[in-house]
Image (cartoon, rainbow, N blue to C red; front, side):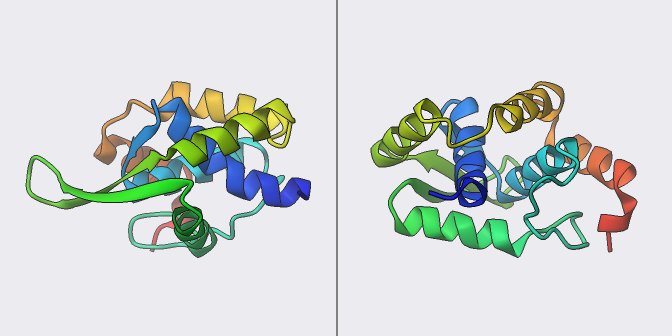
Length: 144
């Protein structure tokens, strides 16, 4: 598996696992992956573009659809306390096995794992609106 392919595939799975195998929010995933990419000085590029909710990567969105089609992750619909639609990602048994294999075989570079860990430590527990505000204020060029 080429190294570039592994980062694009494995990083979102890694973030989901670090959140206990269940991850709440498409937009939250987009923002955290964006922050990891920036933490890595764009060493890899998901092709984030400016959008109303801040940086948006169709490449990441497509990758998540592919991971679901491969039965590595499930996307589930739910609602927030205020009644808004929210999507949740869960690793499947196959996804957990694949991720374990990838990590054991160093398919996700250690510097990317470290950057992801730092981003989750700093931003992972922020409420949704605070995360958006932080990303928007730190990266205004990505907000339409």
